[in-house]
Length: 142
Image (cartoon, rainbow, N blue to C red; front, side, top):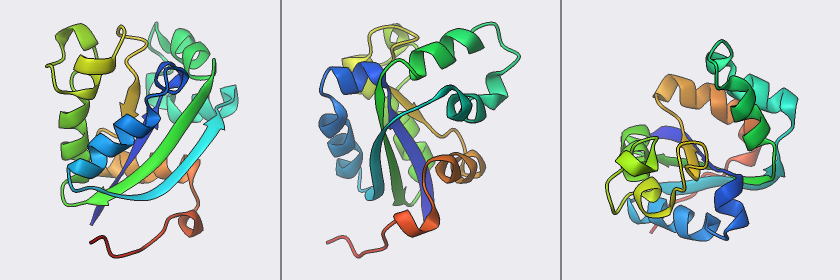
């Protein structure tokens, strides 16, 4: 089974949307196997967003993601990355379809409520930044 990481960003946590967003992913048939809340520090943010380090928006991205608590979750299922990315919608909420997380709940391109892994390979790396294997729970979903 494929795994993917979901982060509910500070704007989503501050607006009390973590439960709704997690529920949307479970309704897709994805199984929640890891969950925690944390305050991301600059070191973790730098590791997580390392692929964007050379981009002009990197500093703002780190400032935003460290501005408040986040919810980190790992989901598992067939085509988990693709299913979650489709449910999240386009990065810019203004360009995201209604019915998607960002289309319904995103504020703007920075405060777009969620982050999700963009590939199975990146998911493995991202998950390892937030969870140890022993923190991920294996169970049969009914």
